Each structure stands twice: as C-alpha cells, then as structure tokens.
Image (cartoon, rainbow, N blue to C red; front, side):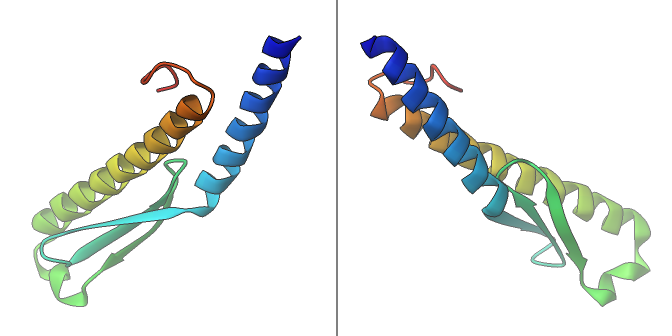
Length: 99
C-alpha cells in the first residue's frame, strides 16, 4: 500500500513538473545576440528574433538561426532534466533514474 501511495505521489509531481515546464522558457542567442531563440521547457520553440542588419548575409543568418535554436533546445532539455532529477531525489530514487 505504501508503494502505491509513493507511485501516486510521483505521478502527481511529474504532472506538476510537466505543467511548469510548459510555462517556463529558456533563451539562447548566437552571433553576439544577432539571433535570439526562445523555447519552453517542453522543447517547443516559442520565438526567433533576428537583428535587421543580419539580413544581408543569408547563409550566415541561416547558420546563426540553427545555432540559436539548437542552443535553446539544449537549455530546455537541461531544465527538464534538472526538474525530473529533483523529482527522483524527493522520492529517494537513485540519481539519473528519471532522465
């Protein structure tokens, strides 16, 4: 019975963390801030902003967009992993089990 209660608590906490991650955002930039990307904690890209002066070199701009988006998504994954790790620690689970 105690284990069932712990599983229910874990499910409740996991749902809460997922909801929090949907509303939290991370930001990354490339090219010294020429391109900025914002993503949620659930790895959804929210916005990309580009400095108007960067439009002259399309190839460079494309590379900067890819770099900023990839960095934002990596920050998002790290945010989610740290929240999930705290969930496991709160339940006495071994580190890395919920990643």
